[in-house]
Each structure stands twice: as C-alpha cells, then as structure tokens.
Image (tube, rainbow, N blue to C red; front, top):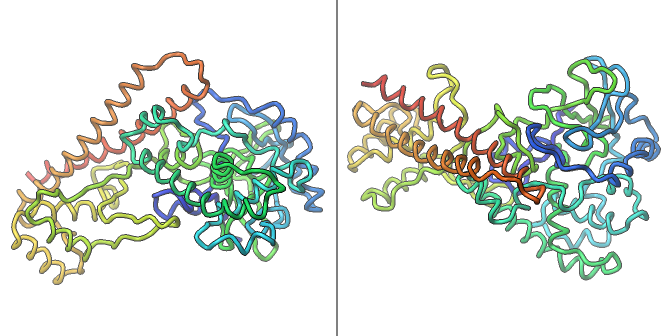
Length: 463
C-alpha cells in the first residue's frame, strides 16, 4: 500500500520536490474567510453522483459517506457512525481519469515537453465539450466553474499587489507563463484534431490546468483524478490520507478518528504552507503551522570579490537543479521555516544560508582561501563551522539579521495597508482574496520574526 497524494507544485511551482506528493482541493478556503456559494446547479448535479460512480465501477465506493454542503463548499459527511480504522471509501483505478484517457488519435501529437497536468487538462476540456454525451459527465459537471477559483493566477494586477512582498508574486507570473507555453504547444493539436469539439481558449485551458493541478493525485505511476475522493476537505492535522494499492488496483482512505452521523469527514492533503496553498490551490489557513518563506540572498554586485565568491558558491553549494517545468533553483535561494526554539537540533536557520553569510562577510582573498582549506580538512563543506574570528562570525549573522529586518518591514507595511484599506466591496472575490493575502503575509511575518529573534540570540551568545 502506497501513500497517494495530491500533486501540489508538480510542474509549475518553484517549491521543492517535497511538495510534489501532496493533495489539495480547489473549492476549500480558509475557515476564517467569507465563503463563495457553490452554484445550485453544481450541487444538484451531485445528487446522483455516488450511485453513478458505483455503477460505473461495478463496486461499492462508500457506504459511510454522503455528499453535502459546508462552509467550505461541497464536502463529504458521515452518513453513519464511523470508527477509527474504518475504510471510508475505496475507488478502483478503473474509474480514475489519467493521461491514458487522451483520445488515441491525438496522443502521438502531444510532445514530451507537455506535462501530465496539461495532458489531463486536455482530457477535461474534451469531456466538458462533449457535455452529456461524455461518459464522465456526472463528474465533470461537479467540478468548480470559471470564476469560482481563487488561485493567484486568476488575480488581477491590483490584487496581486497585495502579495508583492512574497515570493508567490513572482511564482504566480512564472506559473501563468508556463501555462501559456503549454497552451501554445497544444493549440495546433486542438485546431487540427478537435474542430468538432469547438474552440478551446487560453482561459479555458488555464482553468482546466488549475483544476487538474490541484485535484489530481500523484503516485509512482503518474497522475490521476479520483472522483468522489476529491470531495474530501482538508484538515492539516489529520492523519487520514489517500493510499493506493497497485496490486489490488484501488485507492482508499482510512478514518483516523471517530465520526458521528452528519459530521464532516476530513483528511490531510499535505503539510503545505500558505504560499503553496494560495498559489496552487486557491485558499489559505489562518495560523498555518507549516508556513515558510522563500528568500533570496545574493552576492552584492559591487563586492570586489564577487566573481571569486560566486565561483565558490557554484563549486561548494548545491548546484542549480531544474524543477518539473524546467525552471532552475538558485544556490542563493533558501526556505526559512519557523524557529520554535533558540536551542535544539535543527531549530536554527538553514546551515547553507549561514554558510553563505560567512562567505559573503569575507573581505579578502586570504579569508576565502582559509575557508577552502578548512573545508578540505573537515567534511568538504564550505563555511559550515563558525568563523574563528568571533567578530567576523557576528558580522556574518548581522548581515542576515539586516535582511530579515528588511523583509519584516516590507510585510508589516503591506499588512497595515490591507487593514487600513479594508472596505465593503461589491466584488465578492476581493474580500476573500484580501483575507487570503493577509493570511499569507502574517504567516511569513511570523516565520521571519522567529528567524530574526534566533539571529539576535545567537549573536548575543557570542559577545
């Protein structure tokens, strides 16, 4: 039995590959947010969804869950008493949608540069155009419609300004660029082979990619959409997850606690920060314990030793790697998590970030040479040990402290602006997105303040 998870950041996010095996649903929002209403037609279409799926699978999917509506939108509820350890749903592979569902006549014309999310998006678009003639119509008709999603790629420029201090701002631009690139790659296929299905616009494709990118589940065999399972809402502290059994050819969820009839059943999609949630899934969680901050720490261009330091970074630090969409991770990019203790193993800042600060604090070639010699005499890693000159060690960490103070001030100013500009809007989406931006920035602010306090304590301990 394998853990099967939603595909957050699989091909467009700049985040680490640790996020490629997790799962979130697009119509879930922070519980603190005013919720947009799921369309009555969408809910009506789900009335007979489970019986249809069980007929299609020729097996029981779930005898303990029913589809209903919660403050988070469409949800699954216990239809009877559920006890810890009960199997609450079991979805055969035969009723899961994968890239294999692409029409055989167009499959050879989809290039290798087009990822599985884009391929699944094509499947969704084709089935949607078929309408009630589609064998998947009951499922397709239950998916969120355009205008119901709050992923940042759907935000306009003024809305994106609310998250400009965060790395999510640039990641959103990169994500939109990648979707456009995929659309241009597959557009000729649409025009040549799918004329009878009507025109597919970039807006249609972007919506379909976002649906798939947030709903599809990843495994060793690729991606698949799992009908019914993707109606489950998210609880970050839940131990219930989606698992798959390749031998028995089904995916299942085991309850991690007891549920009373009528109670909403929840699972954990992944240990995601709000930066990932807002970008890839269109919602945030207040006080998200998994929040983190992506920062950039560069060698100043005016540094007389710039080229030498850059060469050392490329030689000793982890080399740039490409993510699923071909973008490179920089050796100067670091992920900062909340520091919950001034002491304790693994509770400080990333060692690689502190090592870079020590390199950047060097003002002579001799100091750099000394670091190289020390690395050769120890474990081969550059500047991983405190500098022998205590004043230089403090200076290196004060450089980091200055960076964190700057990042803290930027986010604090934006949050203050969001709070002061709050006003009633006729646009339903703006209050939702403003609160999402606030959740994101407050979480990053908490992380940065904890890192700043750690640095202050560390420098004080050296004096």
